[in-house]
Length: 480
Ligand code: BGC
Image (tube, rainbow, N blue to C red):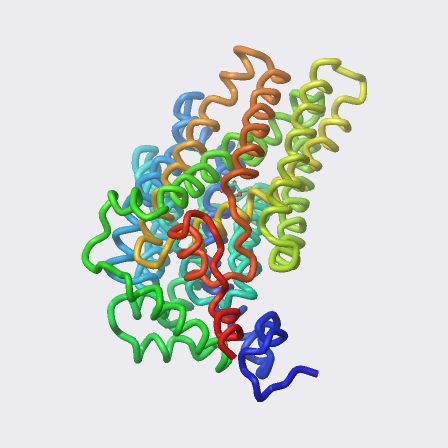
């Protein structure tokens, strides 16, 4: 049995909530509320695939206009990523997420009542702004609230809700299509999770790290009441140590090129770019089209196969939530990339040989691909971009990485169909496989294992020439 009179013994340091099990429930609740930002990210990006069929009739859209309808949200997301960093440093993480809740709710209502196509596009750009900003604000909020031992799982909840949002949007599209109600309610119902995010965040506190950074220690301590006593002590000590070297004032880009932080920036931007370069959103946005290429006869069988892809994406992410803090980030990331490489190469061959059962084989290869993404690169990128940067530059670092993620999302999505026309579908998948091989080498050399580390440990890792110092807990033990 653990000796409870020694708060810093080894066993309790590895167990998340040694004395008060109810803390765990509260911590999960906090993470789920913030992860509604992720749900809206998934819903508002996924909903357009089904809505598009009706939009194009109502507004008589040609194919270029349809492409614009799909990609306008990505333009908004790029802008949101740029603005979100400054916003969350200035107003705080909590207030920024509240503002995003308002944007999601108002954007949903306005787009549902859009009288014409330009108005609809403006609404999609505004919604995109909310998506881009909350895509990193939500995981960052969770990372700053979470105890180190659960941080991976809690932040991965955000990715889980992204995948839930994507899958649910397919079903909502299907339901309203069957009911003959068209695209307006499809985009309109997003007002519900938008309001839930807004109201839920009103009840949560600002993060202890943002408060401490501004010298508001008393509030910072109060903002930790979801942690056990010993975790609160460990976290406060770690935050204090990290802030002793804090320079204060506005964050400048030059800071990323000092004291080892360049590597953190390289890691964040690299993961952001590779998450998109392996081609995930050609599957998420164009799966029915890929299945049609593979010989699926009817649109409905292609859509059915797409929902299977959505379900595997969700359930694999659920698995990642459970194992990421035990197995660690690197094994999931690297193992997942191996699966991505193999499935992309195989997919290219299936299309090349044009076997009679191409449809089924492509479905199997795509499922292996989506499994491999959802177990690694999917959750690990958003987790890492929220934990690898020191508190002072966390929002800016995450915002820069997020900017690259959305920019490459845009580039890959808008070039997919033209690439298929130009070099063929097999070579397109092989190109993504080449990117995945480079991604593997990059992750192998650059990405550290952050499992179980406090955010402040990670900070000193970069500043210490990418070497781990003993964690505060271990340092105290050494003194005892
Ligand atoms: C990516 C999105 C992608 C989603 C799929 C996210 O981590 O950032 O671009 O659509 O995963 O599940």
